[in-house]
Image 1 (cartoon, rainbow, N blue to C red):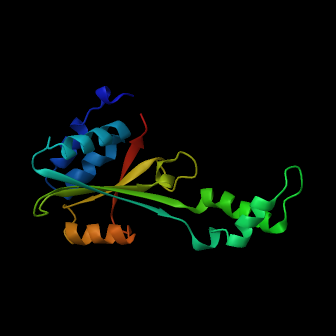
Image 2 (image 1 turned 60 degrees about the vertical axis):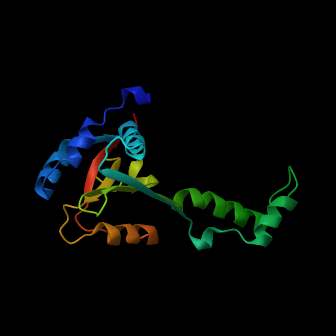
Image 3 (image 1 turned 90 degrees about the vertical axis):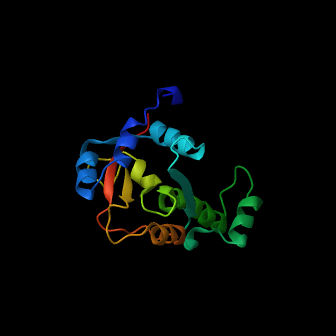
Length: 179
């Protein structure tokens, strides 16, 4: 779907909720489309929603045990075409293959007003956006928390995000569509 077809009305309505209960009710049927989120980011970054600012955080976490050693990488380079891989090269290839299973690409998109009175944080990793083996019963989704959570302040939340701590209780799940 081209950006010309993006429709940010649903996100603006989400931003205009006045309570956590209203936000929860609205989000039950809301579907976040990636084109709408991308368009909203561009609108806010160019000053289209005067009150709001935008910040993002991206993190690629690869478990340490999956980094091939120098010796294992060298073994791949020394491998001869048509010959069986040496054990060290096999081990490196196994680690590289497992990277695609265990790595975590994390994204956070924060929309906030100066002073932090109003804010919305959308966050997810690549596994949240997949149809298969999704941890949420409704499938692909994005997590959401906001100023409607009484014990959360935007500065603290953003610091936690940057440290890689995205464990928030009572976060909302928004259905997500890549259209």
